[in-house]
Structures are given as structure tokens and as C-alpha cells.
Figure 1 (spheres, rainbow, N blue to C red):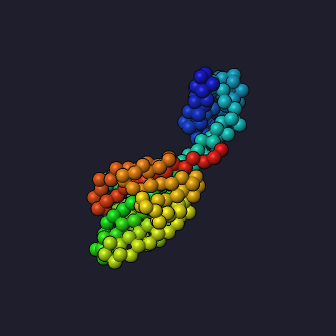
Figure 2: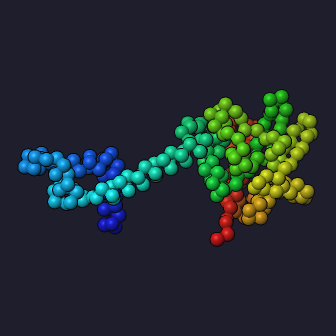
Figure 3: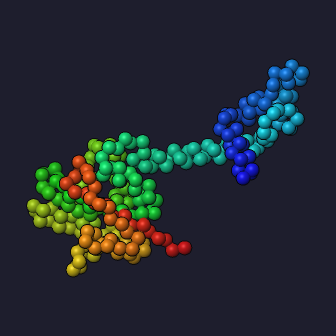
Length: 234
């Protein structure tokens, strides 16, 4: 515990001071300067541990901790950049649900399937199942989170149906194989762990899968999300 506290104190020093010289200067008193009459000599004595009231911290350790802190900051910033939902003020429940799942779907921990039923730009009712992780990889999602575009099923998605034209399509994705010829309805087989995801609301969604209740959203007639947690073999 003491080691953790000491490490925390050193990290605080690194955060507080931009340079090692700034840190040394903070340890020098006006009395030191009065007697020594040399700022450089005062700094050297602090570095050696002869003067100063705080932590003794060598230049190499200060600079290595400073570099680690900067790397951590840049890593967090780059992660925020890759998340299209980062920093967005989301008010609709559907967009909030997508944001909650974005990082897990991008990293491969989760492969969500989104069911949407709504009307297209021609006013025709359409519905379909979307592989969220795949869509995140092949298109820019910021316009969806900004409210400039609506996420709608396409004929190229896992499953698509136009209720007016009767056009129906199904396609495999990098994450799922579609099992359409099945008495219990549409099934999706995860390509990584071979588990079956059942989208029938009256049936269990399957191993490692969950089905959200229909989302209360003003954007669509109906929206449901199925989450599949991928268990990787170790």
C-alpha cells in the first residue's frame, strides 16, 4: 500500500510540473538561494537529496514517468477519436444504446445485431437486421450520432425486407452467417464461436446472447438490439 502511495505521489509530481527544473525549483527556498547564491548549485543539492522538503526524484525517473503519462494521455485521446459517439450529447435512447456498445463492437468483445423497422426515403416500410460491428468498420458513424443521418437497413445487410415491393435479401457478414431456411425463423450463427443467435422474441436468444426490450425511440417505428459476447478460446 505504501508503494502505491509513493507511486501516486510521484505521478502527481510529474503531472504538476512541466520540466524537471520546475520540480527542482519548487524544492528550493528563498533561504537556500540566500546562502548558496547559485540557483544551479541549489538544484543539484535538491537532486542529490541534500536540500528540499519533498520527494527525492532523479531526472531519469521524472522524464520516464513524464513520457509514460504523455503516452497514456495520447492513447486516451486517440481512443476518443476512434469512437464516433465520443463527446456527443445524445438525447435519443436508440443513439445512447449504440454509444454504449460502440467500443465493445469496435474492439471485438461484442458483436451486436440491430433490428430496425421504419420507412425509407420513398415512404416504403422496410425492416432488417444490421451487423453493428461490421457497419462501424465500413462507414463513418459520426453523422448518425450527430443526427444528420438515420441508420436504416439496406439490401446488403444481414437481412432486409421491403414490405411494399416484397423485396427480401439476406447476406453473410464478417461476423455472422445467416440461417434463413429454418422452421423457427431467422437465425444468425456467429463465425467466431459458432454460437447461434435466435432473434425470435418468444425464444431464448441463445448462449452468451441477450435481447434488449424494444427501445423507446422517436427515430424509428421499432428498434431492438441483440448483443452477443464473444468468448475467445485461451
